[in-house]
Image (cartoon, rainbow, N blue to C red; front, side, top):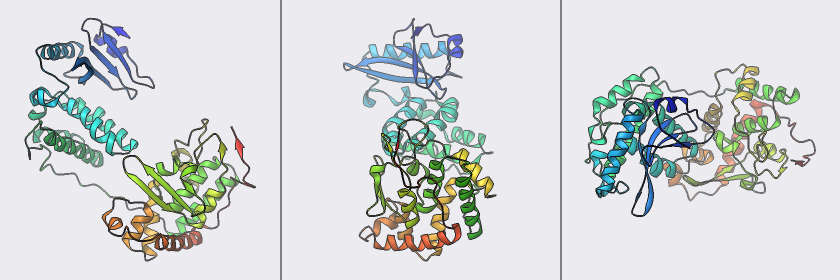
Length: 401
């Protein structure tokens, strides 16, 4: 799409379910990128060393408006025409780099490569919503500790979020040192004190576990939510897995013969999750849907369940556990295994902490201690939760799309 980029055009542009770019009719290569999440960024497309390159000028908003961004794009084009190669860091002086440029490289070369997709989305949200509007146009060497403290203090009413902003900025400037943008030991985040956070240590006791079991049975009997949602919650209880690990679980990750999940992650490696008899029973009672590779299916054809929050709120309300989060089921798993007398290395391995130092030091252990630990956990949970029914199967008939 081509238009003269004006404030009216920028304001009238609405986000869609995918990124889009409006190219300016006055300055070749200058454009407005509109992200699916609503963020609007001024960009410049150019050629260097025979290859097409992109540069992000900054997010729409003070100080970047159509005219100021167009002037900056024109300035960069002059630099390119003069022989400066903006695509290589050695030819591009740190003074020409802004925090927006640093954020773009941070997301591309670090976050996308080394973190999970959900983590990447969260870091991108923090950058686009809070950090870049505040200091995206700042040149990297000019950012001071005062700037960091000011941004951090601005979000003091939400200390958890404020501290995550600080952590993202600190990592960005550590990388900035490695990339040669600023001198070593000049990270402006050094010495900025974090806010105190109220840590939630929410665990289910036997009585609460029994209420949750009754709520799940009631939801099954009265068909208050889909069988996939109930199966997902039961697997969270009995495996200690992360929510996304259950929602994206594929049938080819399930080893029924050895009662295991074998999970893999391009960024974080692979791990094996041992299944309790109850978890194995839940899996065995889930019918496979032809053409759908996922264990926990969603409403869309060939897709997995995306959002468990709405049915979870319904079930926890029945159980009178309104403050219980899905992630607390994982905490409860760890707590129960600890009470059962298992050591930290075993608990870490059961939870799949493949990078935990304790798990790493005991990597030579066989799975037998893990299976024993799982049985200890299963006995305690089964007594508290009560024997679960499963409305998923009844003969485990195969369903078809």
